[in-house]
Image 1 (cartoon, rainbow, N blue to C red):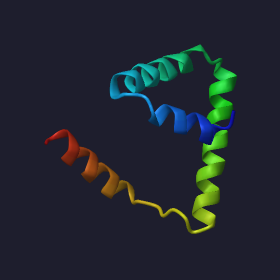
Image 2: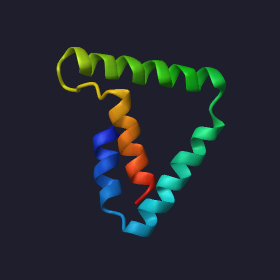
Image 3: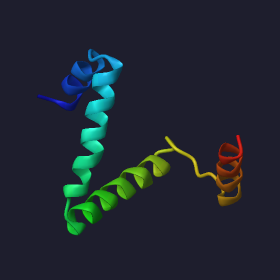
Image 4: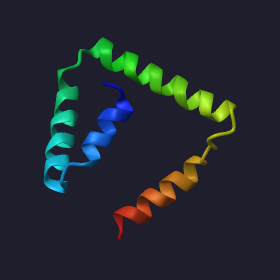
Length: 75
């Protein structure tokens, strides 16, 4: 089954079941070894770099990120 097929099936679930599934997925990440976690971060970093190089994503200056974070916390 492809990730797109899985996504389509997940969207058919009600909110409570999707939340339960999401919780299980997040908790399952705790079972990864340090090497597996590092490999996932390398993969994600490469994906983001590719998006930047292809113009699909743009950088946000640190100051702007911090401003948004503070604003979100203080709401």
